[in-house]
Amino acid sequence: MLSTNDLVLLAKRGINEQQIAKQLSYFEKGFPFLKIVASASTEKGIMTVPQKEQIEYMNVWDTYLKKNKKILKFVPASGAASRMFKNLYEFDSSGYDNPSTILEKQFFEEIEHFAFYNSLNAACYKNEGKDIPTLIKEGLYKKIISNLLTSKGLNYSYLPKGLLMFHAYPCCKIRTAMEEHLSEGALYAKNEAGEVNIHFTVSPEHQELFEHTVEAKLPYYEQRFSIKYNVSFSIQRSSTDTIAVDMENKPFRNSEGNLVFRPGGHGALIENLNDINADIVFIKNVDNVVPDSFKCETVIYKKILAGILISIQQKIFNYLELIDKGNYTHEQVQEMIHFLQNVLFIKNPETKLLEDAELILYIKNKLNRPIRVCGMVKNVGEPGGGPFLATNSDGTVSPQILESSQIDLNNPEIKTLFEKGTHFNPVDLVCALKDYKGEKFNLPDYIDSNTGFISHKSKDGRDLKALELPGLWNGAMSDWNTIFVEVPIETFNPVKIVNDLLKPEHQCS
Image (tube, one colour):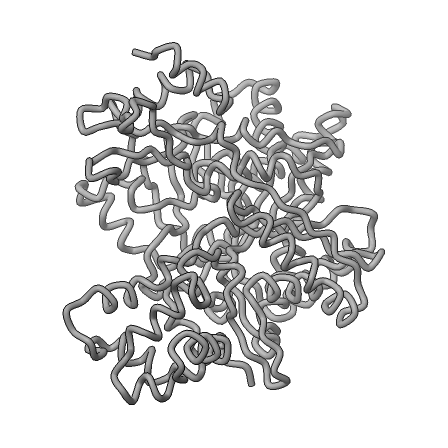
């Protein structure tokens, strides 16, 4: 099926024939659904933190920051901003000239409240000879859209979301989403040496722009917070791209007869994360940021999540050192099982049948894994994944973040469990990437490769099927030790559409 030219192309991308064969098999067979045992809740599976304990966990994290450990903030920032402007695109290509939908009307009625207003106004005056109020008065709304989205103006349809102007401060300071991450990192990830490490994953076409922007902005934030930033970048590897197929599951080829590949989704970033040498990593999407006046709750809970992680990690390390020494009692073994079942919510119906040596090996294998503490907010109707207790391929039950595509919603019993979900995944993770001996885990070893999904796309007017790898916080972290913690909805402020920037939490006071 593969020609000599195909093999040359695969070699350039770092993809082998076995990977292609495996990907094609997924198109043929699909992916198995995961079996839900229960929706995680504050009664079972989601930890709530009383106020007294909040202070204790924050102190744990502040103490850890004084140790000689590498802390890093990891920000997936490769997405283009084009989807933010879907409603404006639809208006621009519509057959009417005046805003008619609620979102269209809100955009123009409140346009002066966007952080990019002054820059957009200047672009309109330069290109149209008229400012925004005049263009609106004359009904030339689409001229404003053109200056916002195209290269003649701000070019926001091309730029990455991380470099859009998000917030306008009273002192006339404008911040991008990227800058808010710099500010946020200084408030909870500064080490004893006064350094903050931040890593952005970016797309190749935007990396140079990101680098120039960061270089220009860093001196201001280093002076403001009296710290030093170490900012690094990476791009999604071409070796994680997946082959596209036609509707008959045959490799899709472009007009020149070449195989077509597509990015494998954010799950491919597990390779980027694996390349990082850090003890503790915070993960948060690029668009989930707020101005300084709203950061207090975010910083508090970031420290709480990190304190919980360190506390649990220390207990795991103590257990593993006991096992290594062989110096444990029957009571301590029972304590470890209780910890697995009631703290990590890992259940194994076969535990009682295991011989002593097998039981210790089972406990060690389950404890000695990467750890993630995941903030969960109460469900407010947002699309996306949520926290569940699910059955794994080895027969054990553990906490998992699942997307609806991973669940058999045609099964009434499973659908009922899914609909009972009380919480939502806001992508708010703190991760431990090293074992009790200080050695890095090889993160690809902990991927469940059977948790990807297939989507329908098109290219050159032809339908195709695309394969997405297991999501970064779904299947790519499936075999991690996972702790769910309830966090306030105030810590979740994503910008999915441009009008989200008009919400109170994105307006500076």
